[in-house]
Length: 535
Image: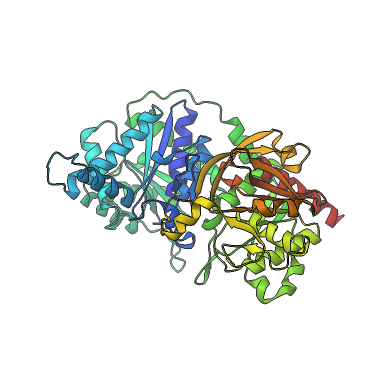
């Protein structure tokens, strides 16, 4: 089921095989008619991750990058919509030579073609394919069929790993295996027998449960791998190794069990994170948290992980708090509670809901020297706040919210106007990796230690260059610029401990062993603020 950990399992298996010296790539398959993830609601589907080549995709692509330390690409992601679009386009182009085009086999064959293409692009020895959704759903049946056909074509080169949940009902206090037995039976009806089961639960799987699953699911006990809850996801590859998962996979493929490469850096960072004692308290101000009575964090998963990476690198416990932007609109007195935080982040977003609350938070951070990091929309609103309250452009706004503002300090990119006018919205933003040239002597330059970097974008609106001089004369520092189009990429304030906004999304390039420089600089400033406030 959704959120059970298929993406982390895929990433962890990849990390284990990578540590043995094998070349790895991974694909995520989403069973949605959407052509990509860019038009999906982040509350329902989670964060939209953007690759360097501009693909808007599922957040699990981010997990692959964070674990494997390698860039994924557009070909590492597919949806039902993208697959059907390819098949229909080929049919229109007469590429089927007059055949009747059928759901089976032609749609699964397109899935298999994409899988093989992704493997060939990097000459991978292992291609890990994560199928989204739940066994038994109609939506992912075609992808299971593709897996069945691929196994038929390459019987010695395909394994199926099933991630299944083992509940422990509170009123019983006993782990139940029946849901997994039924799930395996459902998978059998699709012509697939799992080779390995990853048993997700709150506690490790015991021997009686392994024996029962072994008997009823027609599997060997050693192929049922315990996958209990962990305090943080980067422990998972180490736990899988303790269970012998890497050796089991290689044995089933009849591949040499190469000597384990040194994972000491990974183990050391895990130990560092586990042993951290002192907290750094960060508030994340957003609007994609709530779904009914529950609070979700998947909308900002890359931001969360980037903050954790930086905090652990500094031997701190990342204490993250979700702050609803709209609450600061209805009760401005809540702003004073922001003093309790060591730093504030306003991440990306769209639309007018909660905007004035975010602007109030930004103003409070600016005036009270609270370290602030604004990401994309968080930069836009920092510019709006500065324009209104420092540059005396009273009704300044972004035209995304107020198209009639007299001071459009944030305005739409020229090429985006036609996209909006013609409703050409999907996959049409400024997407992917672009160059940012840094100004020497600025906080951004100090953080990166470089004069030029590449960062990933996802937006339609930019700082309006016609009003840029007016803002910089009042003290706004444009410390990063795209050299090709002279677009502002980073803004900051020189008279503040840390006040930085980025047009791009630096969180997308943060890694467990390699935290992003701007997040590191932000966390260090937050630690300093915490030390001074508690002194």
